[in-house]
Amino acid sequence: MSSVILTAGPLRGTTRVPADKSITHRALLFGAIAEGTSRVRNYLDGGDCRATLGVVRSLGVQVETPSSQEWIIHGRGLEGLLEPEVALDCVNSGTTTRLVAGLLAGQEFHSILVGSTQLRKRPMARVVEPLRLMGADIAGRQGGRLLPLSIRGKRLHAVDYSMPVASAQVKSCVLLAGFYADGLTIVREPGPGRDHTERMLAAMGAPVTRRGNTLTAEHPSAPLRPLDMTVPGDFSSAAFLLAAGVCVADSDVRIRGVGVNPTRRGLLDALVEMGADVTLSNWGETGGESTGDLHARPSSLHGITLGGDAIPTLIDELPVFAVVATQAAGRTVVRDAAELRVKETDRIATTVEELRKLGADIQARPDGFVVNGPTPLHGARVHSHGDHRLAMALAVAGLIADGATAIEDTACVSDSFPGFWELLVSLGARIE
Ligand code: S3P
Image (cartoon, rainbow, N blue to C red; front, side, top):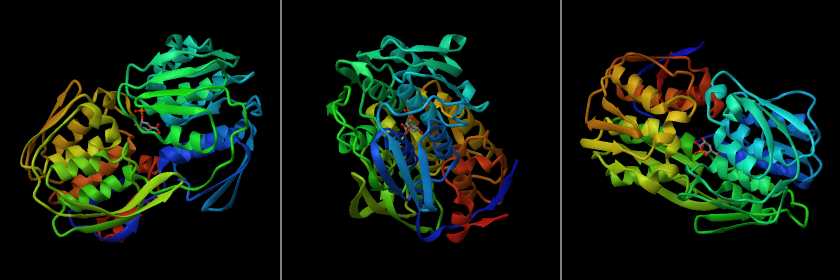
């Protein structure tokens, strides 16, 4: 179990961040069911996406890596996946599990999904329930609420499904299952969640539509066209550098080529509302997604209240947002974010527990947290709980805190951000 010791200090310089995790997962899965050869450049080679790569290979899909920068995916078409000989290991990845469950529910073969100790605690009823409404034959631990799941694929029926929680994973799962159902599947989102699935599938010629918060999918009458795309930088990874740039004195951080899809960049809007000196420039486009360069400098911040439709746009950024809030004058409130409790860890409990060790004034609420600031942070020994985003949020806190901060169990960082510590060092961080 690795650990890292960090000392306070600024980040300065220009960098890029690894590719978007959500888009990389989808490129593999959608490329697998396309007809023909997909080319995906600048994919994310992190733990979660490696789990998806392993799954698609076990389903008979050949994926070549002619360079560390490119995948060539030999799609097998909508009906061409093969029955896996082994259990499909989703490791720590909730996205892999939930999207793959939707894809496999309609295949005419049997498959089993397994995962790590961490993943075996995460709720699967959110996908099993709508899939069963579509007629899927799924068994699992605790009646299908937890992994392992056993899926006996069969033809499905279309549903009109209103999602009880805003989850792009659930939405994507049901839309994928909709390709293998008779009739028109309708998915109603409670609010606008990340929309990579519908963007990418529509670009592949798939019958997926969106009107407001209502999506539809049906059995494609023509093969899905292969992908030819470059994955943008992950906004959720850039978030840690942005937060450090805004909070650590003397910092000046520029991050190039970051995906700035409006359903993903909620942290940027929140930082601006707090008075942060952050800018987005040099707009571009790759793979149907907008990109831009981000620039962050220290500024005096004030507390804000976040809730409602804003939450899905920064759900993964809330641990590091809590760190930023410790440096903002006044009260910051996050509500409507109970989903944090079922991420890699209960991120309300773990964020509050660890930031308090550094001196933060933060209280847990059932659906979020309240932070009073500004508070000086003091270096201490903290623990990631095996949660990549918490480990990186604590690293940002360690750059702010006086003295040394020891972060335990840091290997998890490579689930989404391989090279994170090296990148911090390249921007001037002092790390042992
Ligand atoms: C993801 C969706 C989000 C997010 C996760 C990735 C995706 O989860 O937290 O890191 O790629 O679809 P939910 O769909 O459960 O909100």
